[in-house]
Every structure is written in C-alpha cells, then in structure tokens.
Length: 403
Image 1: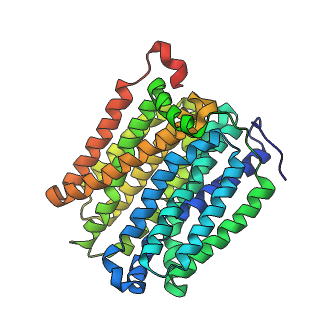
Image 2 (image 1 turned 120 degrees about the vertical axis):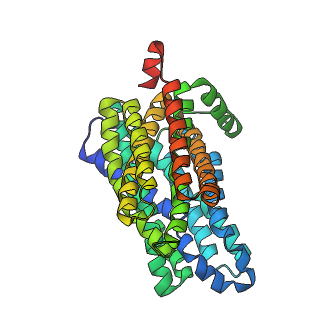
Image 3 (image 1 turned 30 degrees about the horizontal axis):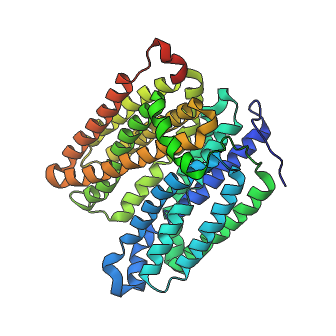
C-alpha cells in the first residue's frame, strides 16, 4: 500500500510520474461520459420502439456529470482523495455494466445518469495535482493533468466509433470497464493518500461553497470569465456540424468529429500554459487567451466556406480556451489550499453553466442570423469575459490574493 504524501518539493521524477498517473485517471474516467455520443444510431437500432428518446442518453450523462461535480467533488476536502477515486471507479464500473446489459432504453438512460454522476473522478485528480505540486509548479501540474483529461475527451469518440462499428455498442461499455479496473490496480499500487483538510459535515461542506464564493473575489472573477469563455467555445461546436452539412461542404457529422482531433493542439498547449502561468502570473495568460479567442472568431467569420480557415480557427480557439482554463484553475487553487475541492467545484459548475448557455445561444443564433451571427455572438461572449477580467482586476491591496 502507498504511504501518505503531502507535497513533494521540486520538479522530480516521482512527482512527474504521479502527475502522469493523475492525468491518466482524468482522461480514462472522463472518457466514460463521451462514449455514448457516436453510438446514438446504434442505440436507435437496438431500441426502435423508443427511438424518439435516444437523445436522452447523452443528455442524462451530462446532467449527471453536473450533479456529480456539485455533490461529490467537494468531498475531496473531507476525505482521502485516493479512496474517493477508487470508490468512484467501482461505482462507474457497476453503472457501465448495467448500461452494457440494458434490456431497454429506460435502463440505459438511468445507467447513463449514474455514469455521469460517478465519472467526476477528474474533479478529484486535478485538485490532487495542485496539492502534490509545490506552489512554483502548480500551474504546470494542473496543466499536465488537464492535458490528460482533454486527450480522454478527444479520443473517447474515436475509440467508441471504432469499437461500436466492429463489436457493437455493448462491447464499448465492457471495454471501458476493463480499462477502469486496470486503472484501479495502478491507483492502489502507485497513488498516495491525500490528507483531508476539513472536518465539516457534508451539509456544511456544501454550504461552505456559497461562503467561499462570497468571500473570494478571485474565485468570482475566475468563475465568471471561465463561464463566458467556455460559453463562447461551446457556441462553436454544435453549429460547426450544421455549417459543414450545407453549402459548399456537404459533409456529415463524422467530418465535424475529425475537427475534434485538431483540438489536440489545446491539449498539448495545456502544460505550456501552466508553465507560463507559474512564471508570468495567471492574469497575463488570461489576457492573452482573450485576444486569441477573439482572433479565432474573426478567422471563423471569414472562413464560412473555407475548411483551412476553420482548421486554423479551431487551433487558435482551443489554445485560447485551454490556456485560460489552466490559468484560472491554477489561480483558484492558490486562494484556499485547504478548500481546493470546493473552490474547484464552484469554478467548474459555473464553467459548465456557461457552456450550456453558449450551446443554446449558438444554435438559436445560427437559425436566426446564420454563421456570421454566431461568430459575432462568440465575440460578444469573449468581450463579456474581457470586461469582467478588467472590471475585477485587483486593486493594489488585493494583489496578493490575485497572484
């Protein structure tokens, strides 16, 4: 069994191996909520009598993930994160087995909800990385784990499409169980225990997130800017499928999926953004991210009929949003070291609310004003993030909290 580790000093091989393990944990676990997206047509064929409800499968998974962030992620401050990770892996495996053997769509939807709730393991892995790393390397540590999470999201759809095509959708859920069980063995052997930083009961632990939000100006700023930027990012992706389906492209949804592979640039940029945040400060990186995302939407506006322009815009957009994400998370983890799981929960819940709002605005704007209207809406969201970033910049007496 592993022994407890508080905070390894310096950037050493032991710390690097732990960060890579946490990155793997984040990637493999978050992939569980994206496997179902390329398999929707397979679900329809398996349950033709309930075909009109197929869309409830990914919706239940996303809803469950949001609920899991709110209800489970704060427990990392109260209990050993290693134990929580193992318990959630066990829970996800059970839910995946139920999904793999679902006799009807209602059972599959219920299992998908449970998968979403329990797959929030990354929300334990990322704060754990911030705890293990010394302060001068916290941004790099968070970026390393986030890169694993991003790669998991990118590859999940590709893997699910391949396994589903050749072995069926039930096999994909079985493969996921095998991967998670193998990961659990490595966690038992390699991952140290964490030290709980709170003795609050569960109800008070949840209530304390409101008090942290009110008390910490930096958390409010990071959560609001993150929400607007992720909203702008999320505005683009559902509309891209609609754009590619029409003139002059006439491409199917699989082509939009390939654009996700281009997003690997963002995953590769995450650790680099973390290093810059450590050296230059989070606010400087967020300012750069704002300009990159604004540039991306300008590129998109002139690329409504150019695949090359869309590819370039996706790279710029993804680097911008990921650099801001790493910088914001690195910043909020420094605000209250004893409450990292709770401040992360506040930040991520706001982040996903912004993403949901952006998706809704993007599709509505597409139908009303077309592609250029969507690009303008993306610029508006980015500008709102920039306004919050400037309006809430720390005054001289608040520099210490914001650094």
